[in-house]
Length: 498
Image (cartoon, rainbow, N blue to C red; front, side):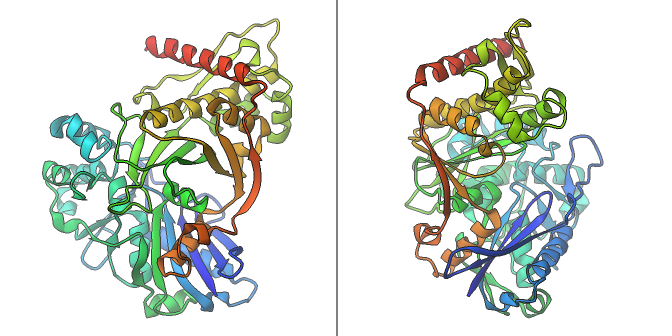
């Protein structure tokens, strides 16, 4: 008996097959093997064809049984994780009317800013928990203003995961509260689709799909798709979640105060909040977590830092000795004392940072001393700057009422670095737990919860493979905090010059 999970990413679609009895992923595959294309007709635009995701899903599913095992015949439920905030517009036949405007497309910023002012800052923050920003609703407003004829043909709007569920079911269209909240369509005070947003933008309520619980039988696989993929007809599609909430689910981060973190090209800290609250400066995003339902409030507070792993990659290309590996870079950086002997790097060199009020402060180096600082100092200062940006965002989360004691992360990317992990644990005074995890496998287990195979997330993730636990370095606590405070002071000075 198996569960099938899909992760609809920007670069590829991943499929994972989970054995129910052992709880382990027994097969995984992704497609395409090279990065999926992004359509960019203008600077700042980013689109993808929804049916390309569907084609990639088919290819990834076929690859799961390249060994001829035919385990797909025993799939009991399907779960979906997907890239957040994308806009898919379909007609009455379920055909996409245009390419999807995906998460990293920036064209809708003016439409979100205008709505924030028109509806009112306090009204937006207290009801939507965010500014309308550059999310799905603002993207739809751009379509309405710039493609009015196409807008008039829209039957339903969807997020990428909703589109894939529609294709799997042969036409059933629905969505979740978590999905609507990430698009800025959900009013948390009134517990309904936001009348403020719909009325301000002039959207008809009819374009919003039916709402289904995140963990439930949302639809079933139709006969034609069953033959195409090799799964049983009638297989329940029983879970869907955006990639960051799903990453949290994959780490069993479901309770207030728990934190999930990732450190890839960008860095993400995602924490669960048990009360309806928001950051008055809108420096973090707040959405309904996958287990949010009345009366149990469960919100996901999302901090995204653009200039994290990309800085580490830049250091490898331009500063580290030629041909060096990341692990060797980490060894060099660890030769340097905590605080990099006064060298400070502000890591925000990959565009505007919401954490800093959408300011574009860039990356900058401070306190460089030609007599003592060498390449290892640069490498450590870069990683410390990344850690400190995480800690800076987590201070905002604590101000919102989050009691952060544990950070859970996958044993991957920057969390492979012992110095990075120990610095983060020591500066935040939180224990870090590392696990071997997979977003598609997490979605598969979410589907198991949706059909009742697992009674809750604790049972679903009881077999999650623990890799390591990192405790704060209490012996060197003062040195870590002194370096962090110096970094914050430098950041304050940089922002003051803008």
